[in-house]
Amino acid sequence: MYSHLNGHEHILVHKPHIWQEIEEAIGAVDAVVCRTKVSRESRMEGKLLFSPKDLNACFKSELSGRGWGESRTSYWVTADHALIRRTMDLPAEAQKQAIEEAGHEPIFSYNQTDFVKDRIAVEVQLGKYAFVAYDLFVKHMAFFVGDLIDVGVEILPMKELQAEMSSGVPYYEGALYDLIRQGRGVPAVPLVLVGIAP
Image (cartoon, rainbow, N blue to C red; front, side, top):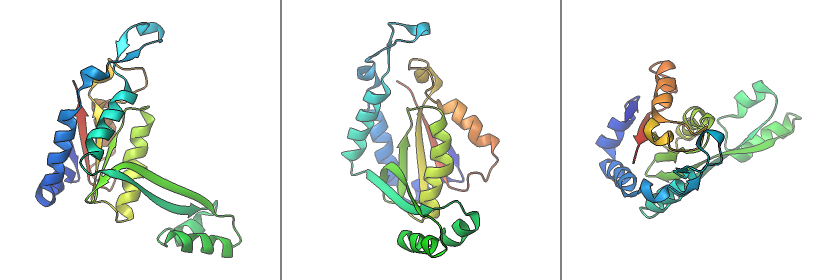
């Protein structure tokens, strides 16, 4: 586990029950029963791998059962950067109206996170490695800047688990390196990076 901008400490001080729920959910997921994917990749053909789909379903069951739910934040964008700067802090409908009044086409967009509770967001990232950067630098940031969360939590497989999955899945150690390489204040959102292994 790695705490960025005191994300872990914030949860422990202000919402220890939330950290306990996250730990309980992680502990309740039995990765062994999720070793269901038969590889078709040449380097591991026929080998039984951990299934991201099954692991995600287990996490969803555990977190949903503890009252965690999906959250969305909607907004409108356009190609004019100056207009985006002027409308960024407005409510969604006011953004749309301002873009239209400026003679531009508003484009609807949103950020969605799978699990939010008590101003803490949790993403379980078992997809492609590029999604980790999106989670850390866009999703968690959008919810933080929008004053919907105080901390973002990113759950990733450790290398030892990732090595038993299909290619392209991110892993904790790589994400940790990428996060630390940005410097102490980037991204400007408190985060907790959590590595899991069977």
